[in-house]
Image (tube, rainbow over all chains, first blue to last red; front, side, top):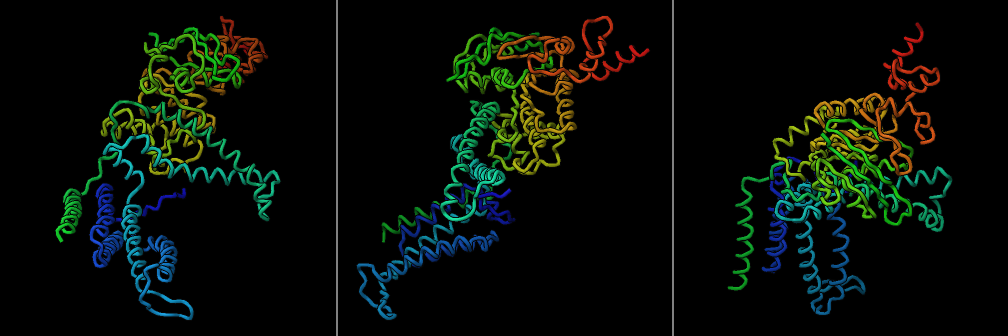
Length: 255
Length: 281
């Protein structure tokens, strides 16, 4: 089954670390460059994330995500470089186009921040099963209903997409035009989306009943099939990260 | 001992004009296997859902009478409480997949996690039902990747793993081939031997005749008859309720071959064979 989750199955210590520690790392990676706004710190943060991704053997999987992000960042660089109001120092000129230093530096800050956030999130997304992440949050007190909602999306959406293609085939078998110019496609859309929506509503009702009889709303304390995933040095890493954040705040206030 | 008692049960779906269940009363003893038959929309599914509390708790609507499950009144208890006593398997195996679990093994664990079964027991129960329904070889597959028959067996396994005292099955073999259906009936039969009470709505009359202790015939929301398979399938007016007797009974009816010393026709292959051999002599 095709999944919409980006999780990559690999054997690495990054995969072994529990999801909560990874969440704290994301907070750390976002907060540190904001508390200490210097290029060096930002570069170090990005560097740590990339090294972790490399250790997790998922660096190649980040390429499509990064290329998409770069596409957006390039527009930021061009617009800031050309039109930022504080632009004074001319860096270079190509014909009528003038690049300014202030704008470019500002764009660089934004770029670093974005890459930093994206790579920190990527560590979580690429090395953690969605179900594992949600389960550890449920253990920490997240409502199981919300947890179910998040996890089921990853399976129900591909199932709905499969339903769409089945219905498309069925409608085609009855002679409906589904390919051609824009008008034909719009006309084909309604008889397609009707059954999909109604079908999902009926399925949802039946699934809700099936969940009920399997004790989903039971008030008994829940148990878990798997033991909580713990990494030997979780507590140490978590406290180091939190200490890092606290340290950065103190450093900022003092200096 | 009365495990299940339905007294004058009446029910009307919201926004519906007519009664879906009209004054139904019957009792089931512990360890009995009861079949529910009747044409489509006779009220079989509604009655099944009334036994686990989905009617009225899930649908609301107008409700009268009483359903007592092991002494628990369904109307005054939540579905989660009743689910500990009664398990239900639905018609469509596809919508019974929770969608939150990545493997068949975890899928079966879902109900057990909810009702707070300790881990070691969970593992033992799951292995047991996987073996019982012969789905061990797919235990690591994604539930949505199973075939219809495997999915249906998984759905039944997930309920049975919760070890209810009563199991309600609503057309559990609709997606199965003859071999698969037989396996389900065999598994259900072995549950019956463990003293579990079974209620099953089905269209496969030959199978019901072979395995059921008693059969409840429904028509238009009313209970027409509640008796042994022999008596039910020997009725002359079966066709008018949209039910066809097992093929063995039909043959014997056509030949006028009643069981010796009774006023009923044979309902299983073995019985028919015995009666017809007797005639030939």
